[in-house]
Image (cartoon, rainbow over all chains, first blue to last red; front, side, top):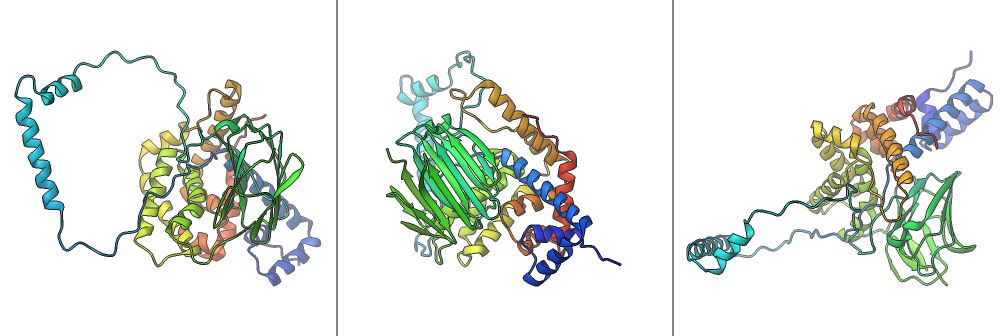
Length: 253
Length: 169
């Protein structure tokens, strides 16, 4: 009697989680078993549906520089907290005393501050777009796809000559392109392992390439700008800025 | 020029630059609220400051674990559920056609509604898998045996396909 592959084994095969020998055994079984092949295909379709649906939720994350600082290892021998508290108390008493004097600036300020507010103006019900810290404009959602067969191809057509592209490697299984600022004129389309971006204006595009992709390329108006081979990104044009895992460059006129 | 993937010794700033986008996306997908995602990601990184011994993949897994727990703590309120259903991505009104915006809102709402019908564990399993975590890492966060992750993911994905009704384009 033929023993079929368990659902968990098929899913692990799909996710590249089976070790070499079990994976080879599973593939051997699949080559002669329609039932398991159909089950694998069903799991693949479900995974693709999940990936596509989740990608619809995405928008570019805010690019905020870390305002957090590691805690200092040295401590002052004198704590300034009591002094600060005393200063605040002193100022509070002084302000309260001043507020009782007619014509004092503090009294005037309180009068203005707590005067009845004017009737609110009618506002647009649209929520204003969130700004990113880099000051490059509002964030607008982009698209993301899974690499197909380990390969991801990103194609830009009709990009503005001063469009900035920020390319980075990500641990996510998905590759993505997000339009920011004036580049929000961009129109996106996707296919298996492919993102196509048309008519991006002169803002910024954030291009995310998964570490796990075996190969990836970014082609702008027919020219290859960026390639990922193995664990490295290769940029074919001068970079404006770069860090450990991120490159910023401009589309060449 | 060439950029190396996964630098061997990265400082806090580099770690933040590398991990913040995917952590933010993960949390945003889970909660559907950009403000909550901001708060959770910030809190997770603040806590990481107190664990200077963590780096590389260990720091990544630790951050996602902390963020998942923070989301879980927040998720016990009904407020979050209302936000989850109503949250839609913000678009730029000046450049986006109203039709496109409406269509996108409907697409997002359909996904959110389907996610609401999944258990918290199913959502985490699928989202961590999408972020590229290995089964043994997901098992650590979810609190189950690595050998059962494949089956759990397969079932979660099937449940999602049963309840998700994509908007026809």
